[in-house]
Amino acid sequence: MYSNIHPVILSGGSGTRLWPLSRANYPKQLLPLVSKETMLQATLARAAGLLNTQAPILVCNFEHRFLIQEQCEAVNIKPEAIYLEPVGRNTAPAIALAAFHLAQTDENAIMLVLPADHVVNDQVAFAQAVEAAIVAAQEGYLVTFGVVPYAPETGYGYIKVGEALSFVTPTLLTAYQVQSFFEKPSQETAKAYLQEGGYCWNSGMFVFTAKRYLQELQRYQSNIFVSVQKAWQERVTDLGFILPDKNAFTVCPPDSIDYAIMQATDRAAVVPAQFGWNDVGSWDSLWQISPKDENNNFTSGDTLVIDTQRSYIRAENRLVSVIGLDDVIVIETADAVLVMHKSRTQQLKAAIQHFESSHRKEHLEHLRIHRPWGWYEGIDKGERFQVKRIMVKPGEKLSLQMHHHRAEHWVVVSGTAKVIVENKETLFAENQSTYIPLGKLHRLENPGKIPLHLIEVQSGAYLGEDDIVRFEDSYGRTI
Image (cartoon, rainbow, N blue to C red; front, top):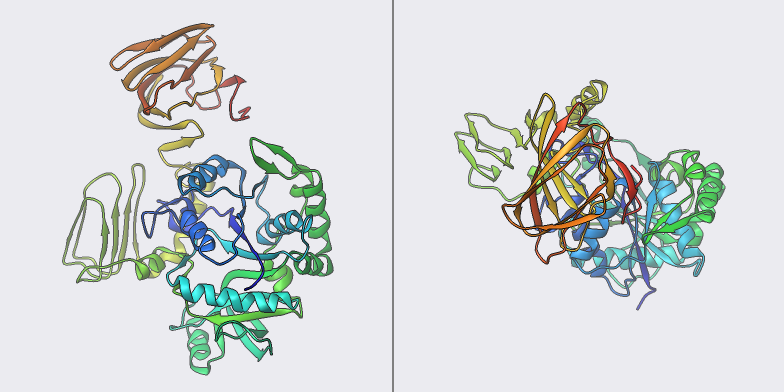
């Protein structure tokens, strides 16, 4: 029997390497890419399946807070805390927030740090690796998991395994000192590592005590330690979320745990293991772990595939036909299509940079925009008009608001809508409609027990989402 485990789930990434399915406002960890569960939900279940596991601590992007909360509720997991990063500062500061949180009650608390967007296929082997890592962590080591390589992979960092640590572990696995860390290698170097042996892929998952992590952070990155400590001390709680002080966290230097601590400390250890790990860092890596047909193709959605091999083809909305192409990635979404050779997945970054420099939005959000009350999606848009489909969850309501530049027509498709316009409350059922004049104070609510679906037609000189003046909001939003 070993100490309690406190999972720390890092969910702050944007997942742009899986564009166009993954977007900044709806990243890959929130998507069901490998199973019916989202990657975040699978990570939560993986941690919960270990012995002596406590409620998890999540560190995520402020903009994802309601999506994170909703996905936790869907799998009946109540986190101990959800920390919202006001700005992204990489993994070292994010982990420090959780370490300060745990150290206030137990400085020797065992932290199991897991990215929310990784795949682990062998839960038993994973549990054995965690048990071995805990023993080393209780002896003051900062432990990472090294994945035993089976191919000369150039997309991962590598760890050179050093001398074995002489701790008795409850499994056959052994912890070793880390001799060196290496960046992503060339193909030739990766082949040499594989042939020589003694190298592991760096999984980006860690085990250590809160005390040891904070000690090493203060020793090697005092600026990060001081900034995060102040941000944590001046935190506030709102709607069940914990918000570190924005000013203190913003001035914190951004750095990963690998650079900030693991490559500097003399207490780094590694547990080499094989538990079916994949970081799903590209479309090619997703193809590798996905089920395939007799032609080594993965297909999803409405697809027609002829004379095509070793490809990943995903249709989200429309029929996609692929004929006479091998080794390709074809991803169709409502507003963007990606066609790419599998060998070029690392170049997707150039497309994202183009979207950013061109001030486009396709890398930021889908047509369907999720909100804490439900979602909306664009259907049509032209000069002085815009049409949207809106879904409001049972019991939820939009903010009390008004618009300076647009009027709105609402048609109820299904469910019941409670509409308030200038303090006048009216119920509307299926096939009924109403009109919200420009400048009028209004609110939409679903008082029923089934989702409310309606069509909204906006008309006016300006139809941007920033033309919303909120007077009251159940979710603490001001913009």
